[in-house]
Length: 158
Ligand code: RP5
Image (cartoon, rainbow, N blue to C red; front, side, top):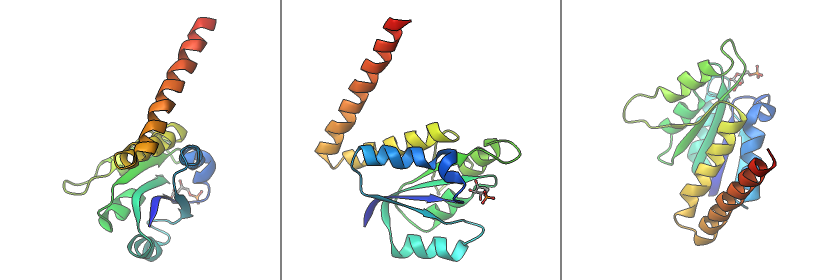
């Protein structure tokens, strides 16, 4: 079983933000894989992937009428993190609302639109996995320390 499966509705989502999630997971040495699967264009394959492959955490990235995270949530009891992708008529607001407005009883943890949201979803996955992995937890703590140092250093230069 993979620690994290990243699903994206289209390969066009990779540069729109998904890459940031993958790079972040790589940074922490998390066992992950990414697949292009669409709730609308490949519904049967989405179901088969979730049922047969399985993962501890799913990060689902989609744009426009973004139903991928909700559909994946319907087929698993693992946590599903939804990341709305920009593009479409409302440049991501459409995807944000499509992802976040889940009916009660079917949670999807929804993040910001695009690269920032994708990076944060990956960090959130690291936080979840870190609950049962002291090494990963320590790495995440160090990430926060380093990030703080970078911000403070920049403010000194202003
Ligand atoms: C969504 O439609 C995808 O997640 C993507 O964000 C958007 C456009 O897809 P393409 O037309 O670029 O394949 O399902």
